[in-house]
Length: 506
Image (tube, rainbow, N blue to C red; front, side, top):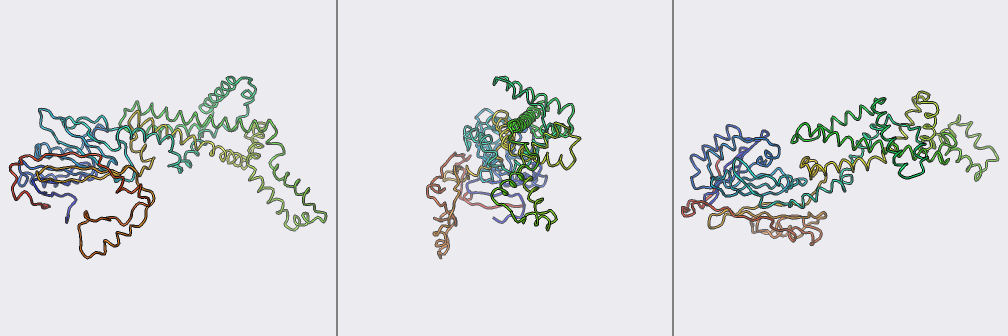
């Protein structure tokens, strides 16, 4: 169909019409569209005709979810001009399938059926967060079909706990850095002996969490960097909560979210410090200064590779000392635990002020390497759990919680058929699992070379690609997830002219 504008009207056989509206970015039609469609309804659309309205966004669901009102011109067109002739509204945008039909009552329905099918999107959207939608413009509706089902949608959300880090490994970069920022000011912890001296497990636990609390109080009283990081994270977490909830609930959710991250960061900090303290206590670290690995290397070298001619001394003299110095400092760079332990001992003995700036940089860099590795699984677990709780219990973050899972499955499409009676049959076909491996379909080339041209819907091989496994081929796994019929009004008035179709443009 040649289309010159972003909106159109298409006249179908047996008195059916399709209105394609352009809601643009403000979720409503402009005055020019309203004038075009209202005049078309007045001049062309008969009293017993039926109209399908297509828009890109299902504002009946979006408005209900956000407690908003949009599309006033569209509502005015449907209610005051079409006056009951709009049998179906179709939209996409939300990447799932939902069909709502009106509940019969004494009042004429605003629209008989609402249909959302955006299952061709890049990822999946949940359906269970919209399960309580029941009313629009004074008409009651019930959900007659959803894909995936409410139960499956809720179950899929569990993937935020189990798969968030696997699906979003890039989150480790910023997540580990944020945790290090939260714990930065608490390094090192020089007084942890009381935790190790307790004789009972419960005593160890009590002492440990008392140390966590003391670290939190220290952050509030004395810290600058960690406190600033915590405040920034708190503001970001509160702002991240959708405006669907009240301001008070946003603050509560944000505080609980940040509290979980802060507690985890402090616990990981103490566990790392306890590990270093235990290694020092058992003489596994901080035994020979910064160059323990180099001293060990010299011992092994002298034992297994003796130098009676003094070759190593001459090489050192010829290279102005670079030969042993390079090996010495390279080994120090790779001996991160020893550097961290020795510097920690110096700080605990003489204070942070006694450490030169370069030494402080080396210490915090070595701590960051280990702390980042320990913290990244935890930050992903906590953030994924936050999304799971929000999507399943609070019904917020439906976009973030499902886009993070990157689900390519659950694809569907909808087809319409006007039967001989003039009724509109609606079929929605779906594929639960999309194949991951594809191969060229050899039959497609042969069919393209045939002289006789056939419509695409009659092709036996309509796609150049097919699934590598027949078991996962969509042709074998496709199923009908919804089928309903919208009856045409005034069937006795159908005439030969009603069997034609055409398009009307502005």
